[in-house]
Image (cartoon, rainbow, N blue to C red; front, side, top):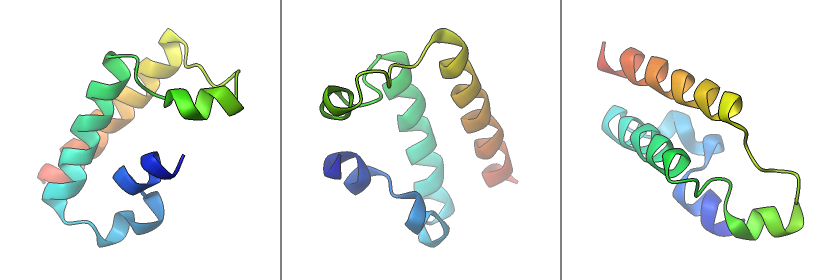
Length: 72
């Protein structure tokens, strides 16, 4: 769980540069598409944390909208 927070910490999101936020959102989508999210270490503790297709689509749509805002 610490590994995930080291990679992306929403508590620090406002301090990230636009470029870093965009890159993190891009990586998030890539991890979702590769079925690597949530992390296996997190799922071992929270066995029901698997995302379904609809949830993955929702996160991807949100990430896309956020990337559009960053680009403005």
